[in-house]
Image (cartoon, rainbow over all chains, first blue to last red; front, side):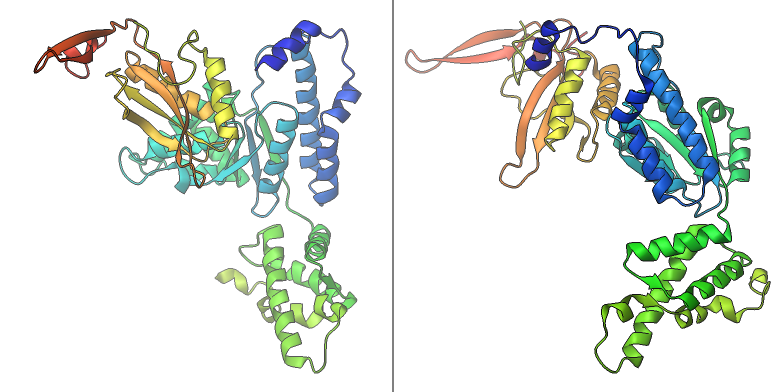
Length: 312
Length: 139
């Protein structure tokens, strides 16, 4: 505790800088690295990346203004991420936590991801402690509430969700320095949620919409996922995968990248089985890591005619 | 008479920022922080009442400050201390505790002498505050 005090007498640390080089700030604060990583690791999502870039610029300027004594209040950082399942909301929230941490807007930079079940209790008097426990865990970081609209159930006026909402709103307002809340969910239902909870709407400053991935992007995502696990698709398998994506999209419960991940998990399962049953001699690394077309075309999706699965 | 027990008790009362910094130090050392309350300030009264649960998985001191403010609202007229518990093997005990809230007036202790057999004198210290029933001792 005495070391900083000593440093202060040596040189005035709290002196207001006359000018701030934003470019340098951008590089030294690590924001540049986070954004570059975001660009590199996440395929597609161009509008999201643009919004994050804009937000980062705003926060950087805000920080510079604060140092010069031009701004005193912590800006409202609560956000809402809307988009279909599997469009990368959680992943981006993680990056956002990192970004805010590097900019010094949150102290720890961890992400606590919750849903209605974690916040809302089952009997009277259960909800408040439960919500507070989660909020305390998220202090100094980001609280990510997935499918936030489930908190509000207008059809049941005695629903405990309302209590959780009130506590959330109170903390979002009074402890803006301590945590950032990110609400996530499907676009339409989130809109309805905000309409019926004006308190949330006014406290959420940044709305970011996550578009669906195109077939092309999903294929690249599939390749990236496999590459991370040291697998690869051969040429025929790549074509089969592209076909699979187009077919899978037409079916219900399509969850973008998540569907792809599940499909790949099943393809790996089939690949393992195929190797196990067909292998006669020792296998080399290439054989062990190549997913071929038959592993993918064995999927249920190919057995269905287009439009067939929708009735389910 | 000012009660001096736990760490920092000979210093002026810690400000909230100082408390926060100390608590963050505890958390960074992976100690579980919690709050305890009492209105019986006798030095041998080791077991104070708990306020909420010990916080084993909160990475930031803001969580404790939130509870501290709630606790002060409720028990602002009593002694409140922060307890930092080290759960690691071989320790499993309190590493640091310090008072973060005290009553406005601390009346101190009475010394009682009991004359025992022969010329023996036995001494007892009793907090004046303990003359009143628990719950209505301060303010």
